[in-house]
Image 1 (tube, each protein chain N blue to C red):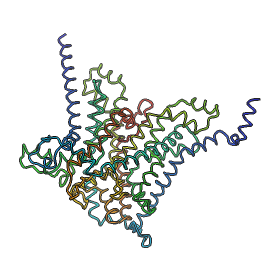
Image 2 (cartoon, rainbow over the protein chains, first blue to last red):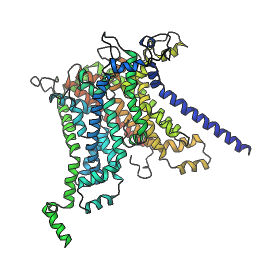
Image 3 (cartoon, rainbow over the protein chains, first blue to last red):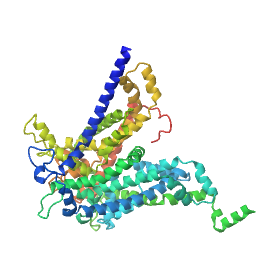
Image 4 (cartoon, rainbow over the protein chains, first blue to last red):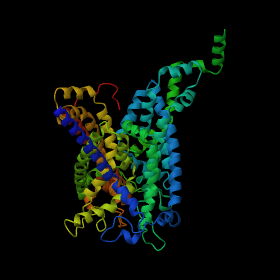
Length: 283
Length: 322
């Protein structure tokens, strides 16, 4: 009896300390983002004072209005968002087509081609990015969005793999029945498989969009300042017409920059985390 | 009779001229054609061009002055002290970043792999840093790591007044490691968590009945069964820390307009990047890329070789492909 009670106590203590660890870890992990949000409400003079104060004396909500009125944030964000959507749609179409083919067709050459897809998963992207740049530069396609569009049409091995894993689980009878009914291959794909693949489609589109939205390297090497995307624009502080850094206003822009990603993540976290596990890709 | 009509009308459209296998083959190649074209024109072709470039003095602009220079670009690192330096920094970076990331993301997964209320919530919160783009992450961390106004130095100053460590300048390697580990934890954790959930409950229960305590269960069951996942993560982590470019590149935008990162984080890819985009040495830069590729393959092969000493070899029970 006594022993049991002790066991119960240690269990409760274990559980509470378990929660303590969970909550503490969460706080530590969220802290940088929290500090950024708090600092975005300071005045520039407050941001650079010593000794440091974590919280602003008076929250400067006007910093957020200033992002829209004093900086080109909206213009660049619109451009980045539109490109992100275009890339997401194109890459989803081409990757789902290929993923479907690799999942459902056993024809000459199919397994060898799939081995290529798998090996591309391990080839570091940067090794290919620079030769691609050399090529696009020769084609005079730098400072355009073609590298993104063409790349999206080419699909992505990660997404192909995700679609393939998903389409593999469908019963064979599904397409056989449709074939007997005289349904063409493309219609089977488009009208039977795709409508049932909404979770993967959503996941892939989110990954692809976030990829463009958060990317730093591609806009840096391909685009000049007047065409650049948010990833590059956010790396340096916005300036006022006199050439001074708008520090806290830029931080407010950073908060607006990450906000859509956080919102999308909270809504689609289940699918996103599942996608991370299948593809090893980070969102 | 109706079957006959169907067959005849089908042949009118030329359907029956191909067998089912042939039709499916055609369909397969049509389905994969966007990817295949992309693979050929944006994958194979640039790689071949890049490979050929590495044997020339191409400057990125003029094709008239282009010359074949043999293996000169591959021998040049021997006379370029920055290559040796950047390789050392890269290895140091990997040795700092990889173990920390592996241990911490595994720990997070272990913490979460229990039947606790609100597990889903904590999983989401733990993953959150991974969705913050590198640029925004660095901007957030600057508030903490900045030399003069950063919170970390301020905190240390309570114990050691006047601390002004340049976490993002001359002492940037630990600072960058912190940011990278923070940003990678979520993804690592999710993969470890999936691995942990594949461990059969019966094994753990059986060990407990035999009188094993929590530590023994971890040491003799969880850890051995997780070695394939650890191995997988180690290989991927190794590859990605060798090719790290993003973080030092973004960090080099701090104030200085020249865009040279601090020496402490002058990684191999930074050196390569600068050869191409700053100095216009395309031949040398692509040669450095291929050397990186060879180095990565060798390092990966080495890790694969160590596999037999520490990785649990029985294939996961069933269906464990992912």
